[in-house]
Length: 175
Image (tube, rainbow, N blue to C red):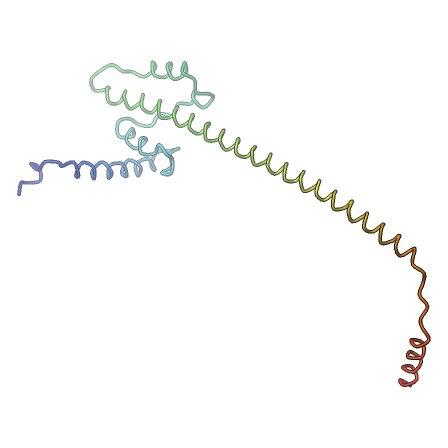
């Protein structure tokens, strides 16, 4: 068996190493202020953290526009061989921050649209229930009127002599 330093990296090993490094970058992102491990871009943030310190682009807090991004990219110092990786990291942070802002706004817009749709559905359901309730109230009123008319037409019933006799006998037996 070859020593560890001379072993070739097989595709399976490369894949495994790539998956592990992705987890490592996500773990590194936890230590970056303003980035949560649950953030969909935490892996990229962890990788960029190796190249350059996180840059908070306060200008992008207002509104992300292509012109703003272009100005921010131009402000990064790209000269010097030692600064190339750092500059790439800073540009990466800029684009990642802009992407994250756009992603959050899109996600928020989708959530608002879903809530508005649910609100409309609830409004229609309530209006339908109110209409149905009004119809049922009208039916109940009509039935109550009909029952009252029928009762007013009926003559009061006089108890029969048999019923009176039974009631008298019952009273006497109690005493």
